[in-house]
Length: 164
Image (cartoon, rainbow, N blue to C red):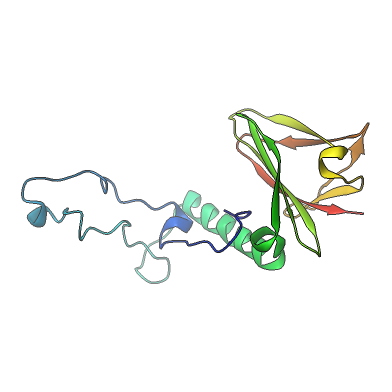
């Protein structure tokens, strides 16, 4: 979502992982009495922090903060939303795009597995030989023997700014 080109839409509750149990289940008998006709059932539970008096769980608060961090990242780095996209890696275990504008280039990379892995990307794929700065942690990945070796935790995504 953070590296998606173009505008994005967040529906109420998505920022906390909210779901209405059984929303997609079709009810055929007395759906109006049960309040489950698919034409008037909400897709969320109505939990809105600070409005409906709910307290978010730790997991919901963590997800909300992460979504906020991603939206802030998009606001500060327009190449994520408006830049060109060049795919660098697309396998069953990893995906990476180079998002570029006239002002900056950012490598978005994600581990799509439940295992830690290190993804090696050649400098030739990026046409770049400087360092990669993680925009969320400020860690740097440097070139070693013509490759950037990028460590990723299970299901982790990183936004790496190409810096000279």
